[in-house]
Image (cartoon, rainbow, N blue to C red; front, side):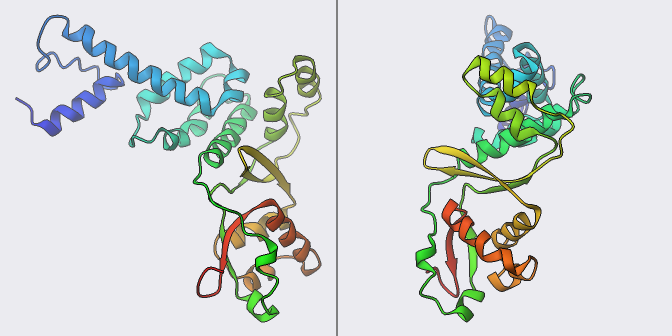
Length: 259
């Protein structure tokens, strides 16, 4: 008789069909295999639905049948390690990039990577954004020592190719406009540096110049304002910082304590 831990390990593997184990030696009663199949189908259906919710544009690009087959393979290869399904899909874009038919169309995996950043931003914890008015009273030397904490929904990423344009076009509800926008996209266009952020209940994508992106990344990584300023053209930094604050990039700033 297996231990409880061994049974749980085998049952988990059986639910994703990763092991081919039907638990016939320990699951008793009439129709044991069929009853296990019910659990397996429910798990696969739930995880496939979760992937579909987080990657709607990707699913549209590849078609429902291809997406379902790729999702099933991903679930077998990478079953969840947490009960929180919002954490589950991180590896899906990289997995999708390896699938037959996708390697010749790298923009699909790029759109999936963008959609994962969007999903992370959408489900991030709620927090108020830091406004510029809270910093205005500080002396310049104090401002230089500030460290910012990124808003929980902020994601800074570099896309591959025209991922943002494709994502926006595919999710356009007007069919005629969607077709025109897709036809206008140059698949050879370069990637972008983006800030992905939840504003209210919607997602905002802010394209950033490479230097502005480096500035935002340095601040989000916890460098002081003075340290981050040393990385960028000083004539642009004030405008960029003002834009970051206006767009809600940060939740708090601190010297020794939050202000």
